[in-house]
Length: 277
Image 1 (tube, rainbow, N blue to C red):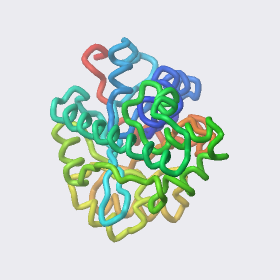
Image 2 (cartoon, one colour; image 1 turned 45 degrees about the vertical axis):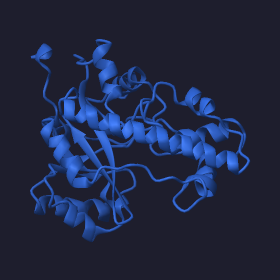
Image 3 (spheres, rainbow, N blue to C red; image 1 turned 180 degrees about the vertical axis):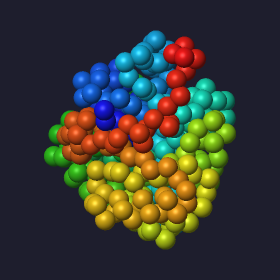
Image 4 (cartoon, helix red, strand yellow; image 1 turned 90 degrees about the horizontal axis):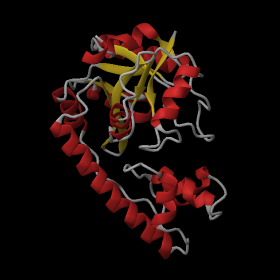
């Protein structure tokens, strides 16, 4: 059966609730599913607190995706199979959430200065349960109110780096994110390395205490995959992969299960909670 180690819920910038994502995973015939919301573990905690995790019909792996940056290059770090109630991790994601709120308010102010009648309430109604408010939520709210025609145009005209509404947000340095995941008992993985846009930097990053590299990714061409497999093997790291599924019509894949990896790559990241052993 296939697996997916990179998905998002409405607790960050995905469109599906955790329950809907799990249902979609079961419908797609997935064996292992990692929920890797941006800078938050609220989605997987929600499943646990609702009695839906652990599941006897789907291997759910607690995950997270930390945003980082090095010399202007976006670096994303996935964490798997950690203690989602680790106090240091909870404190840090809370700090990141607070910084996101401050950034969110500033972006709304900038939109008002440019004549865009978008309110925090407009965005919050769309974001739902998410405390990890980001540019994608603002872009979708702008489209919903008819202020821009598409999410892509919202980014290109307003929200992308260098555009008038862009505001940088607090990001963990890669070494700190890796150490935080390790301390919580998890495995840190370098996400979609091609998006770093600098393979020399990728090689340097892999000298940190990573446990794997996301070599299988929807926008990686065959040559990219082979190159990152070679890097992973050079550093004795696990090979991982995932779809980066958001349930967004503007992103690939459109459906969960369209991009998957073999179970044998996902299985090492899954350790059943005591209630299933």
